[in-house]
Image (cartoon, rainbow, N blue to C red; front, side, top):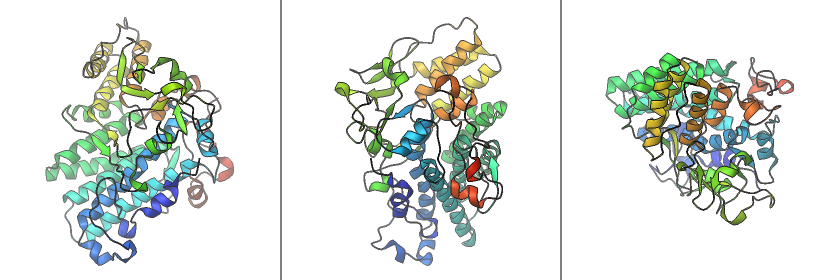
Amino acid sequence: MTYRTSSVARWGAVLAVGGVAIAGACDPFSVSDPSRYTDAALDSALESVANGAEGQLHLSVDDYVIYTALLSDEWQHTGTWAGYDDVDKGRARYGTSPADYIFTGLMRARYATQDAQERFLRLGLADTDPKVVQVKSAEGWIDLYLGASWCEATQGAGTDAISDVQMLQQASTKLKAALALAQQAGLSRWVDINRAGIARASLYAGNYDEALAYAQQVPDSWTGYYAKFSTTSDPQRNWVVLTNTVGFNKAAGMREKWWAQVDTINSKLRDPWTGQLDPRVEIRHPGGSLGVDSKTPHYSQWKYKGLADDIAISKPQEMRLIEAEVAWRKNDLTTAMSKMNAVRAAVGLNPLPDPAGNATTVRDYLLSERFAVLFMEGQRLADLNRFDLIGSYIGTGRLKKFPLAQFEAQNSPGGIIPDDASKRCAPIS
């Protein structure tokens, strides 16, 4: 397997002048030589600036899904690349860890949103302008991703590193500010996007009452927030599909613990509680398919089948499961069960078996539902960390989260130094 191009060629292919990226199916202008596109010209293409800044976030999502899946119990390495194998085994080597390059992508995305905001300020755009709200919202979501899967990250350009909990708090603060502006401007789409982000950030940080309050404000009718991909060029393709899916490359597939539950005829996981086929967890394993290592059975994710398939950043079903989790944490098992069963009913699944008042059983149901609803969307690692289940679900001696990228560790006064990678990302014992 060749090295994933996102860290070098993919980001080099993104138009970075003035913080602009062209992402997904959005191609706001065609320029034969992007380097000749001047600042003055960009100032007259403000919508493209905003779309491009948000687009850099979108371009990071598929990589984020891949590597958090490998560090969690979703995926395992089925290829020949040491980078995948390290993450699969719960290791991170400074200087070679692919997580460093995902971090770089998110840092680029954060800079793009901040650079766009500075440009808009210079041009006198109001804070409630839709383009300003768009990039401020994207910046908050970037910090949310960082807090979810890195033990620490830099607070801003040239600043000390802060802990994952502090980063989640910073994400929440940014999302609340963007939400207030969206509400003032009457931008309902961004209102829901920011409420969903605050709900998740609060849940991850353990602020359960706040998580519930914001989740409840996101309606079932919300269409969700998706990272957009297309087949236009390599930077815009969904790399979950391109590098890991049957019919394309097969460098990673479902972890072995799931194989026995897969119905290989219907390409779906069987619900562990009712035995029904779960339409939310599509897994394909045709005719004894092997990974590119030619020896490991390859059970391919089948949620994303094409290079232009989009990936959910958030959706209303997540909000209902946040409500269920907060109810469980308050020992309101009846409400927790009701919320989960409503989510299941919407896709034709039978209710979960009566837990007979057992809170541990309800917790297991919750983790199972979150796995199914949020399958291959980059949240499983955070869930296993939050419930302290990495050791029992995957194994010991594994990193809990990704450590700060090497270049940040060396240049941030408060960061981890290369010889002390376990300082905050200590392996599970």
